[in-house]
Image (tube, rainbow, N blue to C red; front, side, top):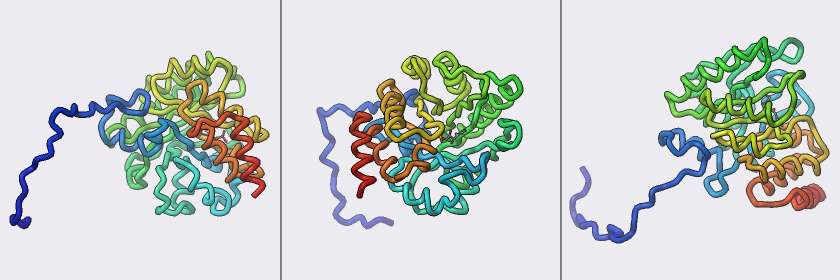
Length: 291
Ligand code: 5RP
């Protein structure tokens, strides 16, 4: 029982000061439960509303691709500069130290590899995601692909059903088949389909007219970097996406395949969170990489 000596009467009720009605910093999440908001707040910085997610899940379809041969050597030194780790359970459990204290967006579907047809995926058991204490689950969708569209939409739908029971957000990842047009009409449709089917975050690609993709998507959009570009171009891509309303990046190859990955992720951070232009970001990249 608590010590009852010296019980003090409360006298600091802030009378006359209205209680803060608390708006929430993540798009489309204002009506979600506390647990969802807590997890989203671990991914999206409450001060900027944005995120720098580091994607290094590529091995699940590509094997030891360039930059990811030794994740212990190439990725672990970058963790301090990222807001969220996006990876598979295999790498999480075998390589990522559990005391990094960074939220994890778990690659939560798997199926085939680049050696065969992509996207014939199944979804991880929700209990496994809970056991790994993930902050979000990423599910790939192949919108417009006659063979895999229905399967992958069903995967997202199922994951959102399961994850919402435990207040775990789901990120829809729009895969682009070789025959798809990479334009605002396609990405706008694919992103909206993700959100309508329960995604709390959408990962897609930057394109001309991106501001319309963002405007019509009721949840935050983060962009993938895509194939490796020269650093200046990758920073321009990032700057344009943020200027057009993206809530951040979930970038892989343009960071870990850079000549100076630590400098690159810090430059990306500067553009996403600190309002740097792409030129300023590139200057920061050059400064850091010359040290
Ligand atoms: C593929 C993914 C990858 O993680 C993502 O696209 C990788 O990012 P980048 O394109 O920047 O290398 O989600 O489905």
